[in-house]
Length: 363
Image (cartoon, rainbow, N blue to C red):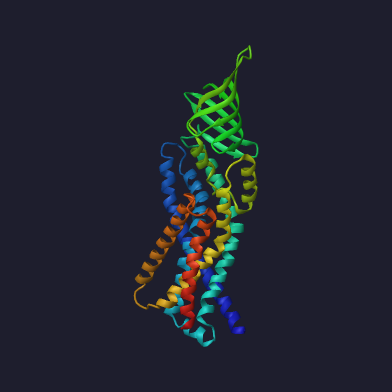
């Protein structure tokens, strides 16, 4: 028992150091690459160099969060390779520690790290991402065309032919906005008219309003009623859905509240549920990366050039990336459920890892 406790402490320290070093390497690489992207974005703005650097440090943590599965895969390969290439593996076996324990303990560490990342680190990265988007929005060329989903309803800012339209709707039902108010202003922000409508079909850019009343901003408070009324906008249903689908700025703890808001406003909660299951599966996914790395390295035990392990790492990363991408595409096209599209890649990796673990444990 004493020897095994020493083994656990040693593995925890070595694995943590490896994960930290690999994370810092990816962080440095992400900072360098993203600075060029931000500098290029602000090339037409006289903002100096400080703002691109600030935005880079706000954005990169979110990138690292998405890359953690591959960071843990690389870290695990490095750790197990160190044991295979040294005499430590022999010493551990002499101490009565099986191959299974050598792999499973780092995997459990990955699981714990995954829980901390989802419940704590994700909260920080989401806040940084929200701040990043908030600052970036002030400089985007599309600032005249904005949409927001709040507890008070759906708000849209649109600019057509120099006029500014502010749209507020109570909720979304399929391809229509319900209980809509449209406020129209000229380029000097002087009010032109207000449109009240029971329903606005926004399937196309030419909205179809039902039971619309137009109130004109003049001294006579003149108004007109239209059973059907056309209204042109830069927004249509797919464009609005794409805006609302960015959940990077929402933490794990805020998903439940956002889901309730979506339900109240009549907006689909499928993507929220998918994001929630991604968060639930995230620690298990990190653990599966460690199991997969251990199963492969301990089975191959190649003592030649490190190049073979570099190739194995690249191949595994590409396969897992495209497996996730394929599963997500199947979910989005409704060939499988969105929840299944989240858990399927994890299940496949765990199955292959388990097969490898059985072979390792027999040795």
